[in-house]
Image: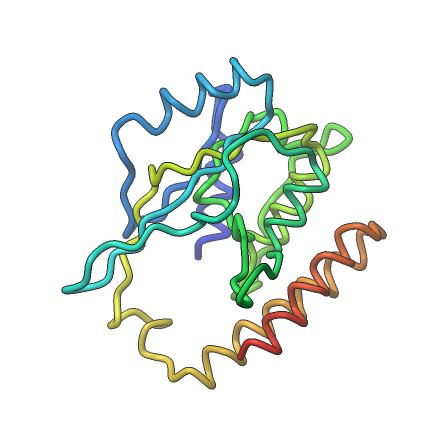
Length: 204
């Protein structure tokens, strides 16, 4: 599974910077050069980028276009990661995932211990990992360019689900994340995650 694979990588990585790339997606050639340059020039711990979504026989769509480019503190990154409802009910979000972010490797340790992805969590496992990592972040930088390319597949396990089943899986994932984050005893995270859950419930 994805958590086991990523955890195996976390045990062997030696570089200063880390990015997670899913097997069916792809990246622009200059993603890492630009991300590292921004981390150094802006003195930030991570770079968040926009993403292109590619669907069969459709034009690519760029995500996250309404959030301004620039530097964000920890609270703002958490807030936008869970989503902020804006004008015309459009949700502005960095997404609660890891693939559109390049991290400093040092963020993956809490009190000297490696932070891992949860085994057995079927949805939003990256969200549980991310909220712990964000606890170590001072600030990050959002780059609106779409360096990351998501390939959607209607024949995938998720693609074959009807909207009601998919909604149930997403809400169950957020509920599991609420429960796990609450155990961390961190009010700011549990508040944001619970608000994200409520927005998802209302949306679906």
